[in-house]
Image 1 (cartoon, rainbow, N blue to C red):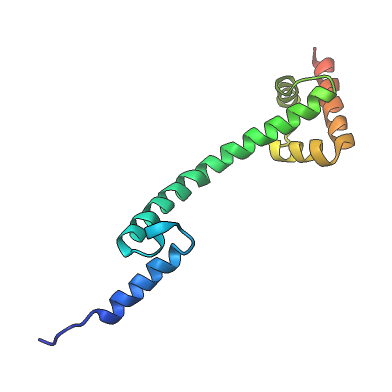
Image 2 (image 1 turned 60 degrees about the horizontal axis):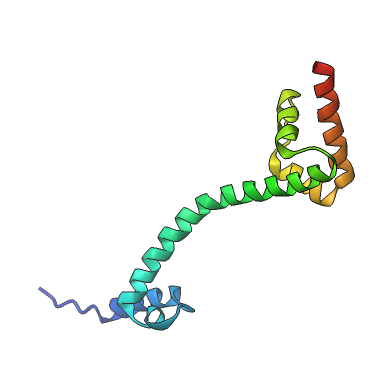
Length: 121
């Protein structure tokens, strides 16, 4: 059987690993074993935080809307309840953008939700 030398492959895989950890601190950027460990943990964190990001943005949108709504004399929870009651299907991302960048339009949406709520009572 012929002899297989792995020098080229080992060097290639080592290069790939160290390329991925460029910019990490201390031995994690230069030592293969520590670099492998760092890559594994980084992947775990990035997977988990991709999930967390959805909740983070939702919380941010809620805070932005609540700030705009308080200036208009109502609260976030009452506003959302009125939207649901009147089947106004705008998501929080769009509403937060309107509140921040187009306050006049946001105010009209609020008036529509509140007016419809008064009619239904």
